[in-house]
Length: 456
Image 1 (spheres, rainbow, N blue to C red):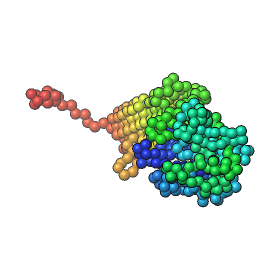
Image 2 (spheres, rainbow, N blue to C red):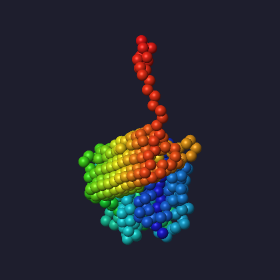
Image 3 (cartoon, rainbow, N blue to C red):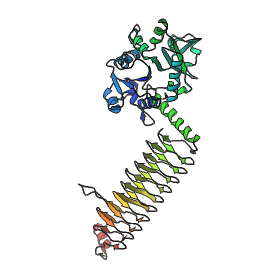
Image 4 (cartoon, one colour):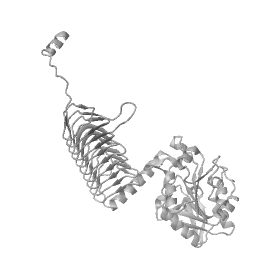
């Protein structure tokens, strides 16, 4: 069986936050998640993550998704892999992929193709590499006619070796049995007194084993982050890669300023994304929509021909031909049905808004079921919470809710029900009825003359 070991014990001191480095996010997901999902997409289901600094954060995030091994002291990459020997020993017959949890852009194609090469060439170890234009700071790959002779680090390289553009990604395939044996032969005879995984290549060659290299077509497999500037570069590279994918699929961007689209988002052809839009999670947007400017959409399903302007929407469904905004908040578990129109400064929470219903401005609909072709006037509120429990309101089809109406839940209005402006509804309203609640109007003549006379 083939398996993976992910090194995720780094602290990332230069990030200046008490978070394990692999848990810093790229496009809304921890770097570790990018590596895990690539392994899973390549059908590597047996995975062990090596934890270290603040290991509880990673273990909590992983749950029972995969195994973990704890590196109590950070004594090098070789030492980190040593902590997984009990895990490796359970399945010695296949190969093991070793990856860095803070190098997020490893991809499933590279994993699968490098494994195929590793097996075909009968290598004890296969290094995953990439060709880059600026190799400064990376270990260079020294190739031979039959494989590789080793990896030389920048500080140890000759002038000729520094011209090599093929560099080490920090990812390796090993025959598992050979890896266990090689780990036992690594020594820490260096200034840092650490055990380096790269030393396994020289040891393998000394033992008469074959070492090879697979050059990925994805040059970003080598990218990692040691500080906040590096993390920004990762986010920029990931952001542009996602935008490029959507443009290839027919999504329009007149300007990419402030646009962040997480890689899990789906967008239909013909949709235009305007500046300062953030699309997160499992959001799915239909065709021929206009999203933005200034929208935040998270875990929502949006139909075709929808226009959203300055909308924040979470965990909700918005059907086709809906127009919303500006300055609208759609809170979780809401459903905006086909043809609805929602205007400025409206909040919807845990509610269904029926087909062709209009909520023009300045309203709150919480825990409500609103029917078709309803008109909700300015300043209307469903009073859904009494301090102890939340209750629902129901508004029937073709109703008209006058301005500044309060519906005190639980209350039900029938079809074609009307409420007069300023009414507080505390009882059910039957079909075709008008609810009107008006106190006695008192007019005091000369009030302002007396008021200002006192000031003088």
